[in-house]
Image (cartoon, rainbow, N blue to C red; front, side, top):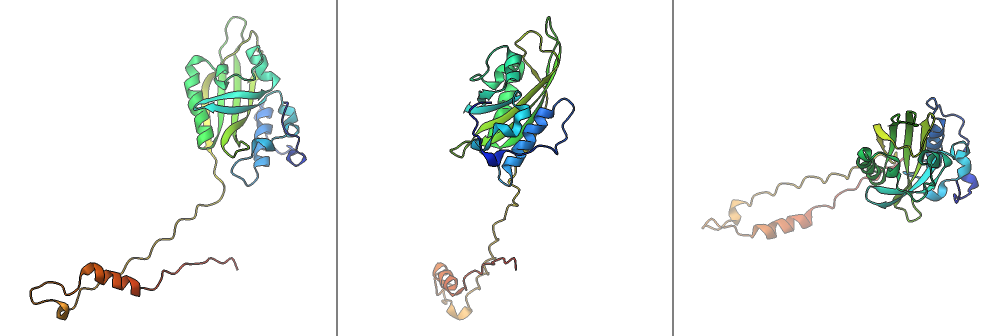
Length: 238
């Protein structure tokens, strides 16, 4: 996986994950992404070091968002090229799917970028002449670019079975989407204290004709000036 920055502090040992049978590469990539992310909302593209996922490099890839619902493969492992029977770098991710599945995958890509969210896909490629049936898993993990926008994805694609004749394209069997939260609880804005009800003017301040001796807007303004400023609560952890 070329052109990934070699940052010593981003080499994380992945020894505690429990992969689904046959999909250890996906588990390793996801665990690495979580470790590099730490307490941040998302890791940056520059944080990704290939040595942290060295046992999953042939299945790993980096996507770049180039338009709504469209992302191209900037870097891709050999497994993806084997499935397509050609070099896949520069190709849109949707090219690895059947025409019937491409719209759903495009919509899912926008959810990953815009929410942001993690998406896990279960895939299948039906049997045909020279093409045994395949099952697959794909995970999409959003990344921030150097500019701070969410326009990159670290992904992993694993297909189980004999590839047979390439290219192999996949149908979307099911998907799981998990929205990413920062882990920090949202702080609601403090509620403003209710405004006191303006008292009615005493009878002696009314004209005999029934009109008010003082304009109501001027009277309200005077009351407002006499109110004490709102108190602001300062929370202390002591």
